[in-house]
Image (cartoon, rainbow, N blue to C red; front, top):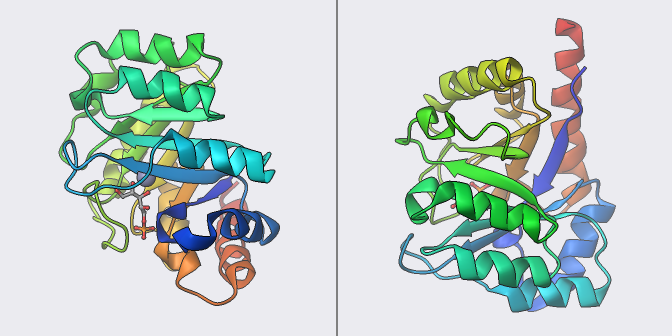
Length: 226
Ligand code: DX5
Ligand code: ZN
């Protein structure tokens, strides 16, 4: 039985109450927090920087913070987010001139390293990097906005990514990000994902715990396959 993790994406939270929202969604059963960093350059949207991550730590958040960098270039912000308390840092291979170096930089600064793969990006980017990553994040929407619809072709890609992780023999999380809801989380788990990033599905509802519990119940159905 895989160990499943649900990572609420704070992009859909109320930014005026970020600390409270983070605390509430963790109390509701979230395993770690996903923080979307957008620069209005690599993606056409602008969100938050290392200050917000630092503020969450100062507020008292001790859970893992999974920083998803949708920025170009990446190296300076890797260092800044590591210093601001990030646990995982992921970036898009197209956004770094030297992907191997950027991955090493993340680990040198004491964080777990991830690569984020867009819907139209090939898994071949991973070919020589299996020993450099702790997290492979498969985008199931194009990066830049919350609330988009899950792209069904992603299921096949998750499946291929799971096979590649198995043949690497490494302990690498396989995350899926974008359009994850109660009614499609099971399919993504069946395809091989073990970390589920969900923003609007959770924060659009008045009771976060209901949504997260319903997601976990869907994931429990996977047990029947083992
Ligand atoms: C999209 C972000 C996602 C986003 C997911 O660029 O990377 O993490 O917050 O939001 P939903 O779950 O609303 O699709
Ligand atoms: Zn994200």
